Length: 270
Image (cartoon, rainbow, N blue to C red; front, side, top):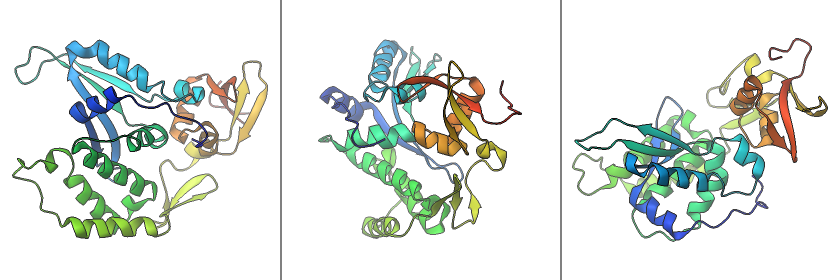
């Protein structure tokens, strides 16, 4: 998202809520290292959590992003745990575009008062190293795993099973990784992983479908040779674009309500 789009200031109550109940989580699945921000509360607080989710979904004045991306999700577990008489409600933010353009900017602007700030800094480092494609390099994997191993409960002094890490060594390794050229390169709208000499994500026709933005009257607003190129214009991923294409979801582009259509005579989606 361009820097010219001003983000509203996060109130102090959210910082307190985050420091007390928030979790900066990294889930390692193959090369993914998926980043999520999570807040979990008793099911009794479902109304409160929905209000928090609504607030977070509306903190940026870029209306098209608000309406098109499922930035904040609510998950409920009605079955009680740990002898509690209540279930849980969990707020999760894992969309990379929202994290990059909104959440990191917000948390960077805060004056932290607890060790939770260390988890945020580690979480942010993992996210940025992943943007450079370091999760596909042996050295990068080693560093990412070390960062993950010292986050959240692993940071607590009461955790007797935590891994002993040379923090000075780790910081030197972290500092080296961003200094090298990115391990990812865009080629014809697809992301090529240099270290693996292959393309990222979906191959073949899944990303190379030609699409167009078309208004409700059938007027073509813009054409794209790749789903990823369309995503760049909409501040979304090619997976988002494909989903909107398949679901015929109306979106906003330059203030107009549009639909994504396949741009050929043998469209899969009528």
